[in-house]
Length: 155
Image 1 (cartoon, rainbow, N blue to C red):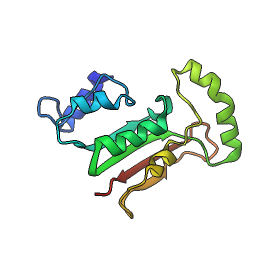
Image 2: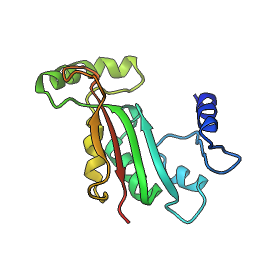
Image 3: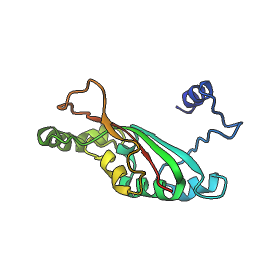
Image 4: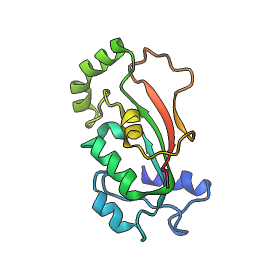
């Protein structure tokens, strides 16, 4: 997916050559490797983007917290689009039911991760800026319930 990511970001004006794009070949949980690739001072990153990835990260709560506290600079933003654990008890039951099999078949992806809540729970966000909303037109009873969000780290 790196070639496609480079193509799309280049069209938007970002590139590795200009120093406005950095693509790493390590997992999000490898905070020390991520920091070793980044220029100082730390934390230098102004935007963290997660698109359908938190569901398959080992120890997602700890990883999210570390990325936000150690990698994201004050005033930086977190943008995400994730399928998450439903607020509806009946849908959440089915998500939890299917997750063990789903996770084996789809590389560790879990249907029952409340990623949107984990990000919010890190805290330290600028009040009145950003938040979480649903995917337009998606019914509440969808097994792959999505949330989109944006939070800005307080300085």
